[in-house]
Amino acid sequence: MNRKQQASSVKHQAPESGRREAVGRRLAVAGLSLVLTLGLLGFLSCPRQALAQTLKPKKESIGLFPVTVGGKDGYIDRAGKLVINPQFDGASPFSEGLARVRVGDSVTGKWGYIDTTGELVISAQFDSTWDFSEDLAAVKVGDKWGYIDRTGELVISPRFDDAWPFSERLARVRVGDSVTGKWGYIDRTGKLVISPKFDHAGDFSEGLAWVKVDDKEGYIDKTGKVVWEPSK
Picture (cartoon, rainbow, N blue to C red):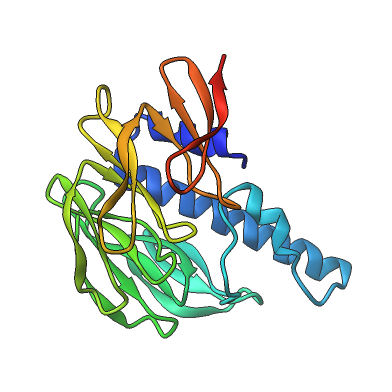
């Protein structure tokens, strides 16, 4: 997925928790299909580059995949064996050793995180969540977004109207509603290091991020400087 495609997902109108769960499920299905296909061909390893087009590559290969059995979600290993019993109402792939799971329905349920044994190490208390990235995860509390560390402690207080995972030590956040709000970037302390002034924005990759203002788009560096002038 290129920066423009990734950033344009911000405009999707589906409910936020459903959007994040759908993204996770597509990754899991793609990954499991890839593993099974390569197994039939007799390969011993899985080329993770194929998954990078769906979502940014993970740093580790946990080898667990979310599945639904009897209306509940659990996890299977690469051989198709259930290793975490179906007990959750929503589940996403593992990222940095932890996976997002939902307890309760898609409207009133809460999200938490499990480890590879299935233990709920961060209690289900958040209205919506993102995967862990660079040891932090974006979580929604009420109608605002903040970030937690791997212990579940809020290290960046919920004060943003939307937030995405960290990438290259910066995370894109929105200030304002989905129609008139603007996107900027925070560092790991929660400080806005690039002020919210973009209509749409992508994650940083190799030092640059795609941004769009009105009908013009371009790339900025980590100081917010435009390195490729926006154009139609």
